[in-house]
Image 1 (spheres, rainbow, N blue to C red):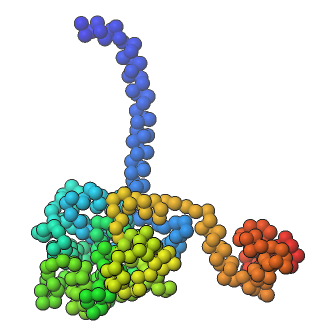
Image 2: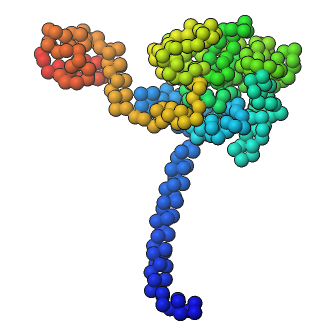
Image 3: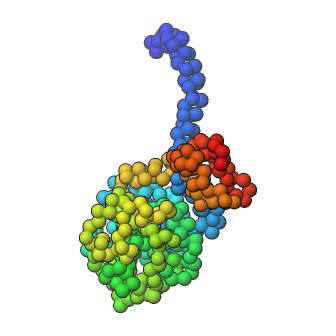
Length: 366
């Protein structure tokens, strides 16, 4: 009976076999394409492009060599809701990435500590996380960054910032709060980064309750008190214009400036607001959880702007606009019937870079 069925459908079977054989290369190509895109998604290092063209990072050999260990304080219920997004975004740009939780998870993976969850145990968790990094990754990296599971890090900008500092000297950085401790302390939510020497001192003496408070709430304040007791100062992390790099609140909150009262009391730099108060090379933001991380990832690493190079050239042109007695104002004014809008890099005004000076060519006689 089966043989009769085969004979009856032999043509269909042959046709099916031919179709399958012809489809195999296509299936393989599709698989390779999927693997290619997945590999691109998991690339370890990326650069900031566009309006935030990180030429300084790419040209700064010291910055590119800065090795950063990142550890994230999380919890079992937040591994998929929050920490998974860190794996997909900024975590892949750290040289080492560890998730510290109250339970070990070998598949995620996460390192479990013998600590209960809850705000009353934040000090134990914070100090425990840094003890784990000291014991397991001290020799792997130069600087050691701690983040919450809703912190977003721009690792390239952190490397660029740290390239100017010696990791063999005791120091740490973050969003500087001026309260509770004499020298102040770093917000835990903004992320904080410690030098190798700072971590060494902490690893050797941080277990001593006479030096470092071991339990309680406000883990970031407890860690700050520990740093002060160990003679480790909190460094100034603002840029040359006094603008913030580390941010303990969301981007929108720092832009709008609608701050909670505690922030106004705590912020060491005057709780400034608006884009002009934030560095062009921000390092971190807080309260960026889950899919919001993908939003920042897209905006920072995947968008392009045709205006970016033009604006950069415009800025350079304006800075050198008066050379050999020729100025933008002299050309683009009412006398020559050319509006300033016309000089905004459209005809009739064109910027010409010629050797050591910049001149203005107009379609009108000058």
